[in-house]
Image (cartoon, rainbow, N blue to C red; front, side, top):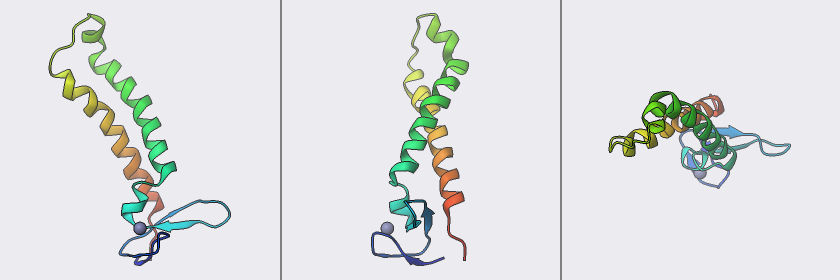
Length: 97
Ligand SMILES: [Zn+2]
């Protein structure tokens, strides 16, 4: 559904967020930096990423080793829940025609 973003410009698709008594609608670009959405994604990534890192790499880390692959595996482990949380928030916030 196209319309006007809360920042004042036209948008093809809008996402609705609670903001006090009146909800606000934002375009994708502004929805992606909506503070509550980002905060929730960061918290989810911290919790889920830590648990997944413990499950997947705990034995290696507790052995006191840190193989080179972990430099990309651990950040990727945190990126997945961040992206899933962001995606889910956008899906449920999308304004439908
Ligand atoms: Zn916008």
